[in-house]
Amino acid sequence: MANIKKENAPKANKEGGSNGGDMFSGIVIVLCVVVGWVIWKFVMGNGANFEGGVNTGDPLQGNYLAMVYKGGPIVPVLLGLLLMVVVFGIERFMVISKAAGKGSLDTFMKKVQGSVTNGDIDGAIAACDKQQGSVANVIKSGLVKYKAVKEEGFTSEEATETIHKEIEESTSLEMPMLEKNLTILSTLVSLGTLAGLLGTVTGMIKAFGALATAGTPDQALLANGISEALINTATGISTSALAIVVYNYFTSKIDTLTYSIDEAGNTIVNTYRRFRGSLK
Image 1 (tube, rainbow, N blue to C red):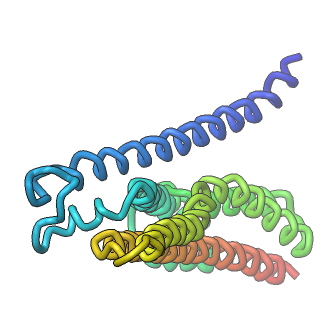
Image 2: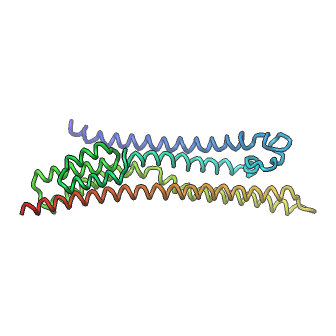
Image 3: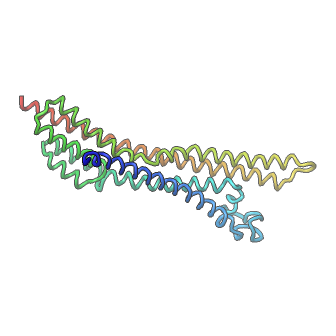
């Protein structure tokens, strides 16, 4: 019974962490949409931004807040999506920066590789403890396993498989934390474009509605419809462009961390092979 409890405990913690993360993401999404609507309604729609002191009037000359407000009801949705990109971007930056550790990752990798090459495994482990972060944790697990297989006297092939397996298992535990919410960012790339396109379509419907009126077309309604379409287009493109930049930036960062782990793993394995070769 005691063994069963120990086996189930990590699974429960993992499920609890996953649910907590999903709840955080859901709350952030809802809050961003609400804040976007508040900004659109009470900041951009403030009467001080319009002629006559009411938001039904024309925007004051050069007042971009009022111009964006005239983009219609799709604008607060786009503002919410833009806020999501910013919030999740900041959250990912904090997490991935923490994963890299306290000091320079390049300096840390050179120190670890130098220590391992010289056979100073304890020194490499001490460097990992000082660096901290996901990369250091994974490399440390590989170094600890290195010491274990060295004491057991494994062959090069057995040691290679054992060390690689340990590093892969440690990496699989760290990667979900690094990649979390990247799916949301990649989704925002498409949602920003689609929401902007929806606003463009609704604006053009209003514009063609003005042209369809009997007699002389309503010039003001026609201009407002075209303006609404262009505002939504610009806002949607801006949101998608920012989401693409943020997503690619963090994907590149994660690839760099993964490469550093693989590089350190190969160094550990090659060092053990040299050690076994010196015994022959």
